[in-house]
Image (cartoon, rainbow, N blue to C red; front, side, top):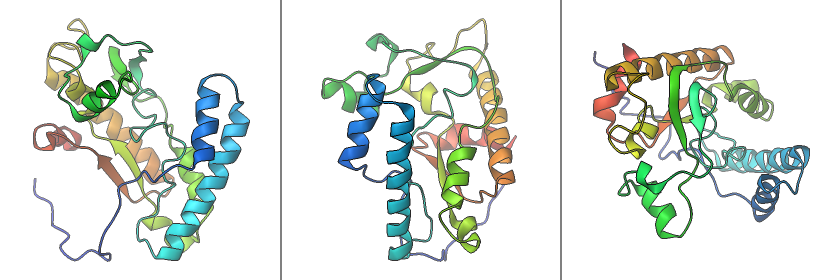
Length: 221
């Protein structure tokens, strides 16, 4: 299957999704994660900062406008933890990871545990989008004429498979092969894109698609 190349986009440059968080947002998020702040307090500062960063992008004439991913701890967001069959591990063993993967190396070399770790423990199924509320709020901040330009990013389909050592990404009694594993991931992504499209989203970008040439075709089966 071939796709046309967009050689003359209506912009000179485009950022991915995440923008710098304010000190206040980082402070409140860390306090919330430690159980010292309420979710409603975190939501208020997120709402405020998203309004500010959207205004900045509009004023600067950005073509693709994001919410700065201010509701996410990191760019990969909540899609994977929101899938049935994926389980978050609070204190993962370092033996789980390919230590040469950039984000793993960056965290461990700085003395931190690797970022959010979710691992397959059962059949992967989509059970509802975690992004529709975020997108709806983003839509509320710009004129309807700009809705088509609003952008969300989703971590690439191979994101968690790539982070883990051979044989660690999924149990062999759940998936016998990578092809079976990625077939269910592709179905989950297709459902997510269908739901986002129904909410008016026309601009989704896969973030950090390492080895895209090998894994991305599963999305279009």
